Image 1 (cartoon, helix red, strand yellow):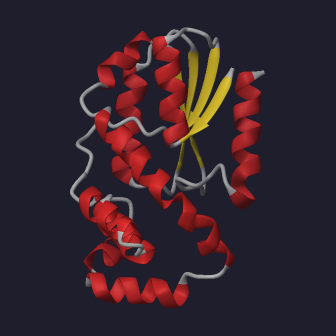
Image 2 (cartoon, helix red, strand yellow):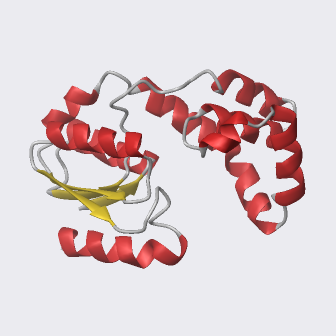
Amino acid sequence: MAFGHSYGGLVILETARSYPVFDRTAVYEPGVPAAPVPTGWMGPYRERLTAGDSYGAFVHFIQGAGGAPPILAKLPYWYLRYALRIGFRGPSWQRMRPLLAANLAEHEQVAAQQGKLAGFGAVTASVLLVCGSHSQLASKTQFGALREILPTAVQETLNGLNHFGPEGKTAAVVAERARAFLL
């Protein structure tokens, strides 16, 4: 049994595909691309990280990765960088900043999976594929495509949750659903 979220969901499904060690897995919005993955932001992101400009790097992610609200993607780079420096600091930024390099590495691995969706048809484990009702429509469409490929998958949508459902106040909802499936 295993549970994974986002990139962790990709890792779990790839493990289940390559090594049939699980009888059941639960994944929450796994990072398995069914559509083209935007990669143009990765080079500038890496450059900003190397230059020590973590806010600048994060702006490239926000505006290029495709997951941000459209209004943020349309703001001028300089403006959004300035707004982040003013509004996003303190303990939450101090926790997030060291993770920016790992964020890039994870997204590079997701992009490397592009075009390999059909390979997940080899997964023999029963899979609970969970997504949040507040996640982007494009993401939900991708999860549906993944559900069609996985031979024994059940797809469920949890009301009121977004991509970060397994975190914070909504974690218990996701944990309870995954526990019920896995046990």
